[in-house]
Amino acid sequence: MDELLEIHLSALQEIGNIGAGNAATALGKMLNRKVQMTVPRSGIVPLEETFKLVGKEEDIVSCVNFIMSGDVAGNIFFLLNESSANRLLSMLLGNVRDESLVESTLHEIGNILTGNFLTALSQFTRLNISRSVPALSFDMLGAVLNAAFLEGGHLSEEILIIETQFFIEDSILRGHFFLIPTEESLKRILTALGL
Figure: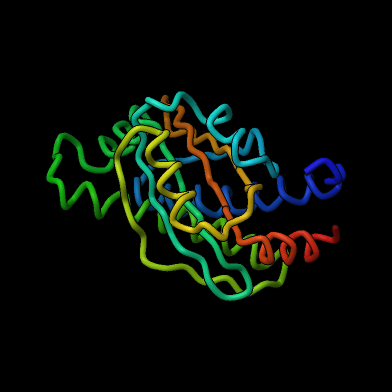
């Protein structure tokens, strides 16, 4: 979105930072470890550029997807690459790899992270945003993103992306938030940010 001014990009970055800070505190309690999160990059990008920002289409990822409703409709999801997801699961579960426990753990991590991000977005924009229960998938990045984008054919061709880095002791984990609103909801968010 070429017409985004530096002040609007700064607002998106601040939303990401607030959400990341709150999520780091909650995740730290869950892990019983100090967690720091940073937001090295955020912005609104065309849908077709998403793959370039995240990785290769054949990379295996973990994706926790939510459907948004209220003043903002669309999808929000959080992606972790395979190695980051495995390191995070090892910190929480040790060597236990029971499928239902892994699934519930990733759902909870997704709830914590997206919940804190959406709370920051809601407070910053004063928009009411609700979300569904999470859906979890492990697959190639291309398949995950295509499925998420196809679920809502009415969604905007531009998405809000927030890259996050987690620092947990000696580990650095990378993840990405994607907010894919409907066209109307994207306009509502940008209007609330003053665009």
